[in-house]
Image (tube, rainbow, N blue to C red; front, side):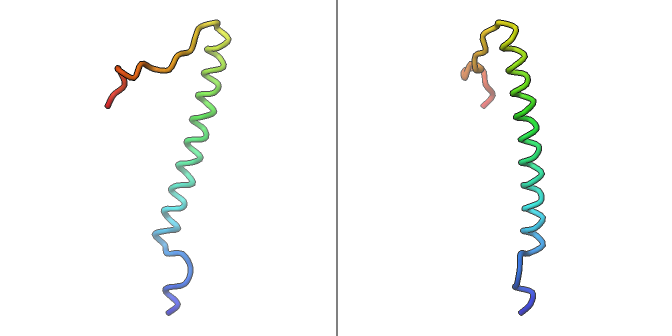
Length: 56
């Protein structure tokens, strides 16, 4: 019955994978914020991409 207590090895591995993904996404967000800041200082307008040209 001890094998059913606590999180499974698979769920621990999935948790670790998701934590790594969240950390990478946080780094990407910070890089994008920095890029937006740089582009904003150049006086150019920042517009979202045209939805008609985004890949589906």
